[in-house]
Length: 218
Ligand code: SF4
Image (cartoon, rainbow, N blue to C red; front, side):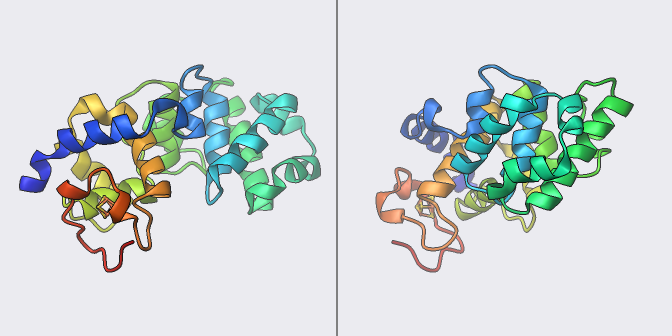
């Protein structure tokens, strides 16, 4: 319970520490939201470095920034563009399938409900929430590995899966933080509270963290 009391203090410190402009590619896209581009960037970002996703997204959107254009792009050409994002063949097929579904079932518009987004094969809960949050400004919590790991280390929650984390955070995280939570925690997880050997010695919230489950830190 004491750990939960510190939520506001902790997020306020992290908000100041991780400046808005430095947060993820997707966060920057929020400034000029285009639901299709946000969806495609999110699909490309799976298991990929943020700067790679940004570079590939820019390259891809120069020649194909709509569902029709992605569909018209020959598969080999699409694979070549997104090659460095890894799993390029699977991702290219997903991009084509998602584009096809958006045209066929949703009148060429990215749907704005979780149920509809999840009904498209290739879109999972994290991607759906990213689109709803970043493109449609809906108060939902996109939970990736960092957003799952860190609240557990902080003792805010005790969960085993990102899905459960989403549900538990919905209960305890003040709504005013929902829009920024993902951007802050992803950057925090990549730079300081890393999965193995987190940098507790240079962590701005060290004094507030019980370091639950952390076996080795730097
Ligand atoms: S003190 Fe360590 S475990 Fe706790 S949030 Fe900071 S880096 Fe993560």
